[in-house]
Amino acid sequence: MKHLLKMLDLSKEEIINLLNLADQLKYEKKYGIPHKHLEGKTLGMIFQKASTRTRVSFETGMYQLGGKALFLSSNDLQIGRGEPVQDTARVLSRYLDGIMIRTFAQQEVEDLAHYGSIPVINGLTDFCHPCQVLADLMTIREYKGTLEGLKMCYIGDGNNMANSLIVGGIKTGMQVSIACPAEYRPAKEVLEYAYENGKFSMTADVLSAAENADVIFTDVWASMGQEGEAEKRRQAFEGYQVNAAVMAAANPDAMVQHCLPAHREEEITAEVFEAHADEIFEEAENRLHAQKAVLVTLMKDQKAK
Ligand code: CP
Ligand code: NVA
Image (cartoon, rainbow, N blue to C red):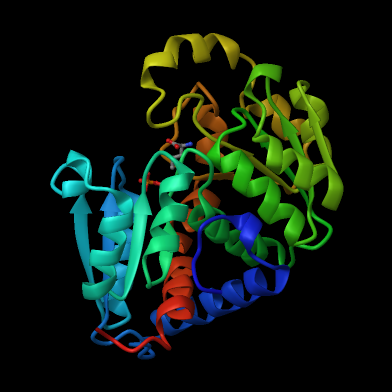
């Protein structure tokens, strides 16, 4: 594994190895066992969109691993004034030991990896959010003891979260169902992968998707960059909400996961959110541990700059 660009690139074995290492690092952190695997190494973090969890968990994660993280807002970088990604990649590769990038186009992340010579980590694009889904899989395994054979249900927009959850769920042996409006389906390549490789269903009917689910996911109706469509989307997604009726259709011990930030009374009711807050905030914590596993896996054996 050289980069983390999207879930489609990872094998099942690579995902399980990352989850196992994440569990170990969480344990070591809890009991104060030193794990400074990245001493002297620097991660650059390029942000073209806002972030709370991703920024703070990567920055503290690097610190806990003995390294350093640099916050690079695209407003302040030459990339924001049009310097090509090919040049940025080759320059940053000479200073840094790894790059995390949050941006719009998936192609920009792929180009950064192609032209640079250091590991690149996707911290969210319009297409996918692999770091989040590794934390999600870690959390489900922590609560349920396994992933294999569980049913995951996603309700809402066929966005970056849906694209990554579908692939991550199927790769780890879960059954995946999604309920979304016909105009807001996941990406074509994700649907092709899902229908060919796993137990997958897509419907417009929320309750049938949720039936017997072990874990229910949702995400915002308007993602970052779609603020101008918010009203149109509010109408299109009416009814695509995780609420008491959805939870009644799911298994009695079903978990709820949300990558956050959440919009209460839109994609999830406050009642369901608060009833499952422990699972949701454990999921947020697990961003830290799962990303430390990614950082160690990608950067440990590289010679520090
Ligand atoms: N879930 C997530 O990626 O959160 P941030 O946008 O706060 O980083
Ligand atoms: N789908 C959301 C996820 C935020 C973590 C977005 O892209 O804004």
